[in-house]
Amino acid sequence: MSSSESPPKNTFLGLPGRLALLIVIAMLALALFGEKGVLRAYKLSRERQLLEEELRHLQKDNEELRREIDLLRNDLEYLEDVARRELGLVKDDEL
Image 1: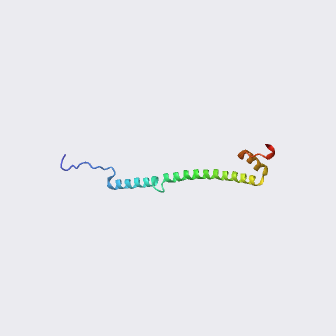
Image 2: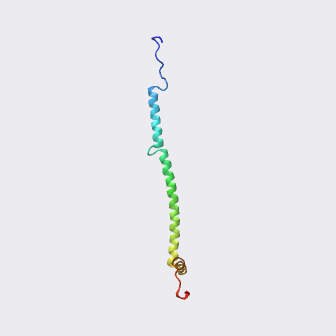
Image 3: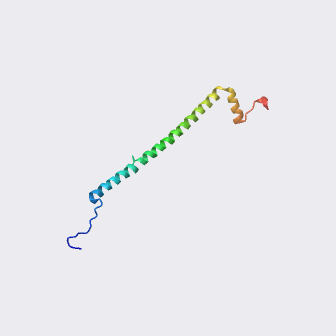
């Protein structure tokens, strides 16, 4: 090597380019994994779907229970049938 030749420089990205790349990588990491990131948003969206589905099931169950309560309060034949099935009750003349 002659004295006028300098060692080859690593010209891939220089310091400003490396800094810019590091900033971009950090921003992408935050966009994906941060508190308001894409992955968190997806997880929350999925959780919301599951909760809405559970809510629909609970609302359906509540409606069925309301109908059951209404029948037990207002339909003596239904009440008698439930007493026979669930409690094993019989009338005096059925023994």
